Image (cartoon, rainbow, N blue to C red):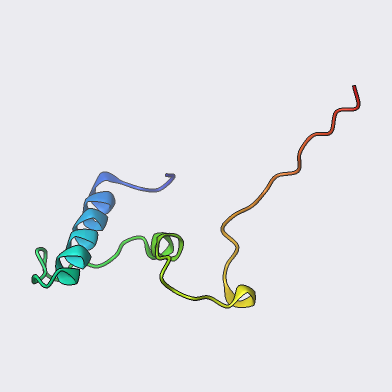
Length: 69
């Protein structure tokens, strides 16, 4: 992904590890770790119910090429 560095990805993995540990009742493994990619959470979190008209479009479909042959 353009603009993603190894240290940013490492921070994201730590953030996800903290979320999973909290979900199973453990404490945070990496204290004070924040999500460096808030846009990724919008695409991954499926539990949220969203209003269609208030969400950002993340899936695009390109026009197909028609062939008349």
